[in-house]
Image 1: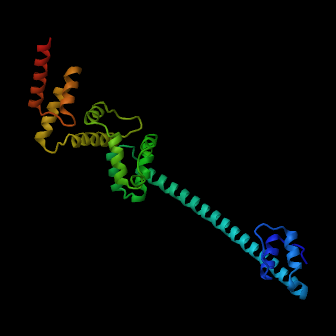
Image 2 (image 1 turned 135 degrees about the vertical axis):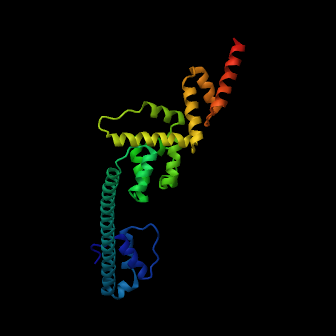
Length: 260
């Protein structure tokens, strides 16, 4: 009768028979409680059936839990496979987008490629980080989650971190040479992009300003290192027009002569 019974089975049976069961009780004690119960003494078969039903209910519940756990694991495996498949597809799509873009990490050309080749918004942040390469790890250490998923915000963070100064763009333009595997069309495009971005940083938008900038750059390139450093500090992110630059240089040289 009590074969295959567990403590929880006997506890349930004892409670069904109207007995009070202590929190801590052994199987032997539960067995004795049931045997001493009036229903057991009056109708053993009834109690036997009650025990059997209780065991069957417990086994059914165990089977249900087991099936539920198996279903959960199967669904988790399917979900993991689905995510893995989606990640592989996303990776392939991203590689296709990168191959289709065929650009380096230059921000201006990347922007143009995004527009001209209709790059989906969802890929832009990933492509930008991919183009950055090792530099991306520096950005990821402090960039916020919402910025990471927002291309415009991410671009702004990257520009603050890595955008060269106007002088650096000018030096890049002056020293630019054609790469061995670069066509002259690609080389020309790179020069134009570099020069246009330099003008953009210098806020040059008309012919007169362009003339002034060319003359100022020529004067600046002729300065000794100490004088050039002083002028750079004085100008900050801006630049001096030719006459103003000349005044700044003469003033500095005058002060320098007075100190000598």
